Image (cartoon, rainbow, N blue to C red; front, top):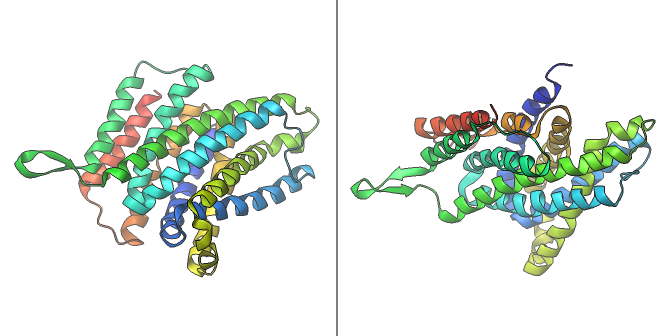
Length: 309
């Protein structure tokens, strides 16, 4: 099928938009760390059932040491670092701006893909990076007193957003390395395991995420808040929706997308989320979306596209 990877990437962009809406609500009700522990547990259960349907096993059956190493590392970078930053950004600046900073993921993925995967970068890469940064800047900057520029967002939220974008891009490249290792060791006759590759990879990444978030939960002593969080029905339903469309459906499809197209192209299409999310931000969260913010989101996505021309 022509443009299969690109089509999957577009579905991922919508999936992550839905995820962001659920996540903003859940993050503010359950705390980001508790939410991450809950979603890792739920995603592991969903992924285990899916793998069993494909392969007859509840775990990645043929994964070797190299596969586990790269995918666990991907989970540390993408989930523990990237998603911790992202969900804190949702709390501080909301899902709309949190997703805007995720346009930093494709340039990060492209740079790392160039060094570690030998993927090509065009001569327009630097221009694309600058356009993306300009789009983000246009959305988050205000003209203050004496015509001085200032941030309309808290600095902490901006730093969380930057960390989220870098973590997402780095995790995606490490995932592709892990997938390449895994594909190489699966027998050609094991078609079920081959078809389940994205789910198996996400399962390993989620193990790293669960362990990491559980340690952070214990270290911060937020485990004392777990009983009240579990009784929060609205928070838990939003966590369930976020888990399905995020770590289970969205992340698995994102790993599938990079199997059928380059990391850069897949990341570019997935980066449409900051534009798609403007509608739910306005009609669900009743947020005021200015023309400048919408234009900034559009420019940032155009910059991402230009980065991979």
